[in-house]
Every structure is written in structure tokens, then in C-alpha cells.
Amino acid sequence: MDNYIVSARKYRPADFRSVVGQEHITTTLQNALKNNQLAQAFLFCGPRGVGKTTCARILAKTINCQHITPDYEACNECESCQSFNKSASFNIIELDAASHNSVDDIRELVKEVYLPPHEGKYKIYIIDEVHMLSPQAFNAFLKTLEEPPAYAKFILATTEKHKIMPTILSRCQIFDFHRIKNEDIARHIQYIAEKEGVKAENEALHIIAQKADGGLRDALSMFDMLVSFTQGNLTYENIIENLNILDYDYYFKFVDCFMKNDLATVLLMFNEVLQKGFEGNHFINGLANHFRNLLVSKDVNTISLLEVSENIKQKYLQQAQIAPIDFILKCLGLANTCAMEYRDASNKRLCVELNLLRMSKLTNQQKVAPNAHSAVTSAPNNAVQEGEKKNELVNNPIQTPQEQKPEVKISSAFRSPLSVNPHQTIAIDIKKREEEGLLIKNLIWDDFMQIWQEYVSNADEQNPDLYFVLKDLTPVNNKNNTVTLTFPNHEQQNTFNLSKPDFIQMVREKTEVKNFNIIDRIDIKETEGKPYQPADKYNFFVEKTPVLAKLREFFEADIDY
Image (cartoon, rainbow, N blue to C red; front, top):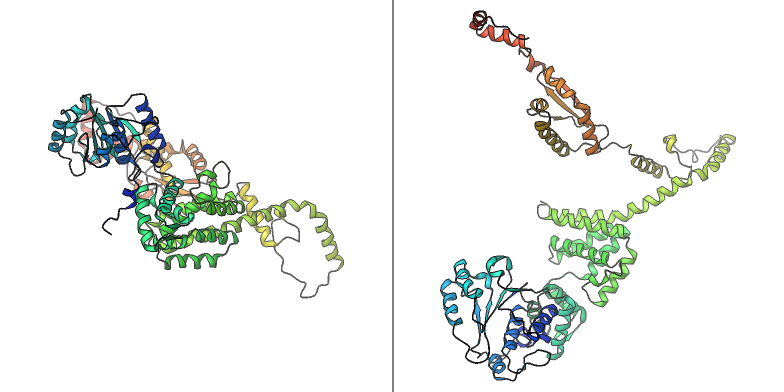
């Protein structure tokens, strides 16, 4: 028990070739060693657990290796490599900036930089989580990083590059580490499982890789925990149970039910998901990802984007062949909308259920459209049959009560043959009118007000008189695609009427509400007793202030009416 070592440490890569999923980094570093073009400072950036510190340690060991191999790996046999492997190297110094981030810590490091290496060619400093250094510490480090001794090398590592001062970034050779692919993580865990004598299903390893989200260290931590939980037998079932992950089969079953319009089963399965302790947002995000996987399975060029086991991939390919792409896209949109609405929904369960029911009705809508189309196209072909049936009714006017059916009145312009369901014919009628743009759209008030505000704002620059008229007006929504504007007097009404047709046309085009109109009127109560003409204004003020008339006579002033 005392000698137990976690897998992340026990199987930590010791050379470049064993680093998982970062070939673009290791190849570049080995080429730099080969060409003797090592930078003075390196900055390794990327998510946690992807190999930044590991690569920094491998690079530091390889730089100081006394007998580097032909493929530019550390020999692990020389005195420098041996001391490093025992964590006893005096030339490779590691500093955790998360706990040593003060300016005094960096000043101590700077003093040490100017002491030459005890043995070997270089003195290498690895500073982990370098973004945690204080601004004062960065400034104290800046000069040394800019002009270090020839024997000093710096390898900085961080998960948050954006927090590092630009002056530091400009002095480093930057390497961006990627999230590790699920396939690479699963393969590495399989290698460790074989070494440890652990039985593991391929699907189970892929689930661990997906849960790790690109971090190998997280994946190995989960692996250790699950080995203890399952007593060394990793199966798909016990992995999804322990990691609280929804089974792939749930999502495949949901899509099958959507395409069958099986609303009842959809609601019952969602209830089962909730009873297992899964949150609605967790489920809907998983469903959105399922539709995304179906979408990429539609094209052979994008199948490589599926990061699942081969067995699950075959299931996606089979379901993608059945599900229409239009259906997949609409379901993906509904799932995305539901995910955004979920947080603010007062009834979160209902929010998910409504979107699931909408998905269940999509294929039903797609089935109606082709039937309607066939009914319309077959109408001319059946015209003769319709005439023959009418003649037969004339020749045999007597019908039994069972044969008499209520007449369905349908516009003659869209009349269909007698063999067509009258309800279907009405659907055709509506569909055709939609295609011809004859159905009336309702005005969305927020859209109109945005257009109105832009119109008034533009008038401020282009037509000051019109702006003066409109700036204090408040449009009133009449709820029937009309808007009322009330003016205080005829002059302002007339000013607006000059541009009214253009404004109405602009609103109709932008909102697609073809019957939009404006009612403009005068507020009689507002205008009553108020002077607007120059002569009326003069008489009004004279009545209030009689001295104005005397001033006019004294100065012999004329008033331009």
C-alpha cells in the first residue's frame, strides 16, 4: 500500500517518443536540438494535463545529456541523466510560480542565474504556472529573460497565456499544446491496462477519454479510481454507471422514437432519464452532441470527426443513413435553442419536454408535404374521373342515408378530385397560398419600433423639419398591422404625409408585412385654443401682453404673416 504510485506518475513519459498526442511539439524540439538552434526561453501553453511540464522536463534532461542518441533523445545513462532521474540535478531547477510568485522569490532566482552550472553545459530553469507571478515579479524577471547568460535556459509553462505580460511573451519561443484526441488517450490507457493486468473494454476506455476532455492526467486519475471500483474489470456498463454518464443507447432510442412520432415513449424515456439523477441540461447537451455526430456521419469526408469507439461509430453510420439531413438539422437547432432557454426557464422539465415533442413532430410534417404535393399534381390527371363521377350522380340522384355526406366547400381555385381527403385539400390550399405570398403576416412590434427609431434618427441628419415632427411622437400599435400616429396640428401632419408613403413601403419590405399601414390623425383636444399661424400667435401674445401692440406702433414695425 505504501509503495502505490498513481498511473499519471508511474507512466509519466521519460522521452520525446513516449509523449502522447503532441507530436508537433516533440518533433520541433528534436529538430531544434539537431540543428543546435535552441531558443533562450520557451513558453509551453495549453490546457491542464496535456504534457507541458512533462515536455519541459524531457527537454531540460535532453539539453544537458552528455551522450545524446542519434534520434535526439536523452541517453538516460550519463551522469547528468542519472542525477535528473533521481531528482538530484543541480543544473535543472524547477519553480512552482503558484506558491513562489512574489518579487522576492524571483530576485532570489535571478541571483542564482548568474552562478555557472555545477556540471554540464547549461543551467535550465523550469517555471510552472508562470501566469501566477505578480506584476512586480514579472518586471524583476524581465531583464534577466531579455539578456540571460549564455549557459542559462528558461522553460515557462502556463494554462493561461493571456495573463502573461506581452513583454515576456515577445522574449519567448511559444509552443501551443493541443487537447489530446480521445483515440490517443484510449490507446494509452489500453497500454497501461495491459501492463497492470486490468481487463478493459474498448468502449469503456473511450468513455473515460471523452470524460477527460483532452486531458491525459485526468483520464489516468479516472482510470485509477475505476480500477479500484470495478476490481480491475472495466466494462462499458460499470463505467457509465460510476461516471454518471448517459448511455449512448438512450440517444439512439430517442432519435428512433422521433422518426416514428412516438410521443408517449419519448416522454416516458425522458422521465426515466430524470429518475436516474441526470439534469435536463446535461441530457439536452448530450442530445445535441448526438445530432452533431449524426450530421458528421452523413459524409465520408467528415466521419473522422467522430471521436467514439468503432462499435459506436457503426451505430452512428446506420442511424445517419435512415435519418434525413433536414430532420437532423432541425433537431440540432431545437436542441441548441433548448440549451439556451433552459437556464432561464421557470419550468425546466417542461422546457425540455416541449422541444422533445417538437422533434417528434418533425417527420410527421415531412410526411404531409409529399402527399399534398402529389394531390396537387394529380388533380389535372383526375379531372376526367371527376366529370364521370358527377355525371353518374346526375343519372342516379337517389341515395341512401348512408351514402349522403356533408358537402365540404372549398375554393374552386384550389378544388381537388373527390378521391382526395377534404382536410388534406385545405392543407394544400394553405400551402399554395403561402408559396404565393398571400397569407398575412403579423407585425412584430419590436421590429417596427427598431425601424421607427432608425427612421427618426436618420431624419435628424437628412430632414430636420421631419425630425422635429417625429422626435416626440409615440406610435400606437393597433394589433391589426396598423399603427396610429397622433399629431398636435395640421402643419406637422402635413410634413409627415410628404414622406409617409416611402416610410410605409420601407416597413413593408423590412418586415414582410404586406398590408402594413399608418393612420395619422390630429389631437383635437391638444390643438384646441392653441395658436399655430403667425397672425394667431401675434394676437395671442398681444392678448396676454398688451404692451406689445404699443411697441409695434412705436417702432412702426410690420409683421410678416
